[in-house]
Amino acid sequence: MLASRSQPQLDVGQALREGWRAFNRAPWLFVGFALLLTALQLALQALQPSLSPEKLAPWETAMDWETMVPHLRELTITVGLFVFTSLLGVVANLWGTCSLVRAAWVALGGGRPRVATFLHWDPQALLRLYLPGFVLGCGVVLAVSVLVLLAAVLGRVNGWLALPPGLALLAGTLYLSVSQAFLPQVALLDDDHPFTALARGRRVVDPVWPRVVSLLSLNAILVLAGLCACGVGLLVAIPLVTCVSTAAYRQLFGPEDRTGLTRGFLEPGALSEPRV
Image 1 (tube, rainbow, N blue to C red):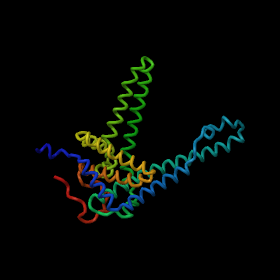
Image 2: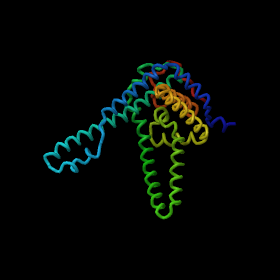
Image 3: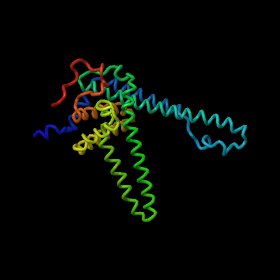
Image 4: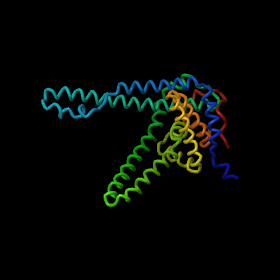
């Protein structure tokens, strides 16, 4: 009995109900913020220049030095603008995720998110969110490179020998997608060390892996429904999925904000007591 009490469980239906109630505490703010993020990303995409082969290799079309200099100047400006808008897009995604998780946490704790809850700028939270994703991304790129190289080498010997690395890549991608399903919440609310956040998510999720797969399937259905609604439904689906995932996170990791992400935004007595 002690073991069963200490082992957190995930009720997907309960997470859906709690997430829906949290979303309904401030539906227009959730939808409005999703619309703001969408408009911001579209604006950045409109400003982002295209890196065509002609712009990247002006010497192939202009051999004369006098005509090459303007091309190189234009190339420098184009690449600089591309990098700048790409970085702004990354920051906007981090800010949007941080704000949605904060608002979902406030709503799940019994509070009502305000405009400031969404628009608050917290550089430390953005860094906590970025670092684990960066570390995980580097590991994934390294693993994919090794497996692809191994598959290419073995494929030259025998085509069937390239199958095991491909299956290993598929299995690894599936495992990481599930074991790190709560990485944004863990990084923002539980632990500010990237390696600890990655290990913490895997350690808690592994015992309830099938339930987390069910949760991810539910989230995929919600997003698909939003896409089917002429894409406009994504303005509802994205914040709703965040609320549902954060509600599931509270079941598995507890209702404590250990990093202070929502400090100053929770109403007195709104946050539930830690579970025993």
